[in-house]
Image (cartoon, rainbow, N blue to C red):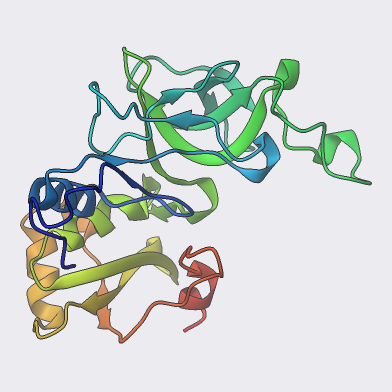
Length: 243
């Protein structure tokens, strides 16, 4: 919310984000204000934590978690309604992210084969959604389990969160889906405002309406003091759904 000015920290060379995806607007604001690159690695426990990372020097693409590290492979996979793989995605096509390499674990203890998180040939089903561009840069778009299905359309909460975070009064935002008899699910947004800033729920919904398709606009915006988080810093969306 209050990045250091350029030259204020002369020995600081790099910002690294971890634990949860960094909103693009936050990374851009931090980098532009400080003149220091923001690098975002990506990985998961089942793949020994680190799978991709952006380069520190040159080739940094804001919003991307970088390229596959040595010995790691990453791809996006098309899946059917049951979550079974259909085919590999094309460049820039969003799908379920899969990783492969010697860093991938052998499976969960005491689970039968049909309950292990693997596609064919040992590719690990990460449960994350994303796309890989033509140059091999990976962009995370959300979690499969967090997708909001509105009248048959899949909506990634992160798309709505990124729009909310573009509002100058918003410090944090989290969007979850709630049941709706007519459309299946509808998005609800939880927003933390910046210190000293003010914005009404109606104003924030109008901000979204000007930038999103109508069905993606949050049905309700709730302004809260804090967002519930796990010890790693990840927002606990289950707690928000139950709020």
